[in-house]
Amino acid sequence: MDMARDIDAVIKSMRRLVDHEMARARIADSSHHASSNLAKVIASVIAVVQRTPAGQNIEWIVVVPVNLKVRIDPDDLAELIGNLCENAARYGREEVSIHAKPNGAMVEIDIRDDGPGIPETLLPYVLRRGGRLDTTSGGAGLGLSISESIVQAAGGTITLENAGPGLRASIRLPGIA
Image (cartoon, rainbow, N blue to C red; front, side):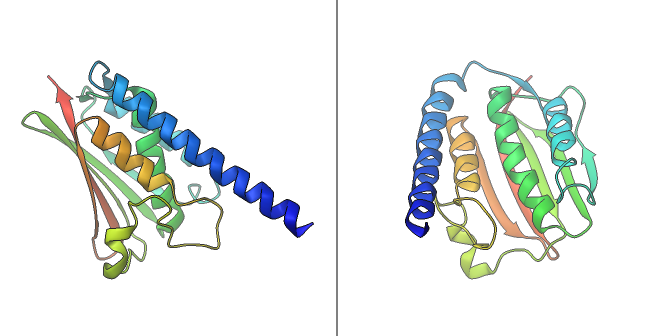
């Protein structure tokens, strides 16, 4: 019984890795031609996260210009924002805020929760593949790694920093005028 469970866990982990690599290839191929309305994608992601146990009790504060567009496929943007919002809802206490604004040719997006943050010594590792801090919940530690791959393929950057309280994910993506 334990061996079957172990094999199943390995298969699921391998599947996630394959899905991750396929997503990276797809993103690299399509990100230069796509565009997304940031406010619409964020609204649809929040609607989904609010239906999860972690997202039900969170107050979502969104300050994003209605017609702000970024140069990235809408599905890739939804995966990126979804990964970050799921983590913010999971570790946040009461509130998650999302702010976005144009800055030159780029769009700056900040997603901040009011949770405990991440120990400073571990911040450099959480964007790496398999970089999980919470080993009690499901997952393979790929969400943030996938998010970083999506951002980089689109020509942007992502940084995580403690915001006292909570964690802030700062994303820069190419904008569309």
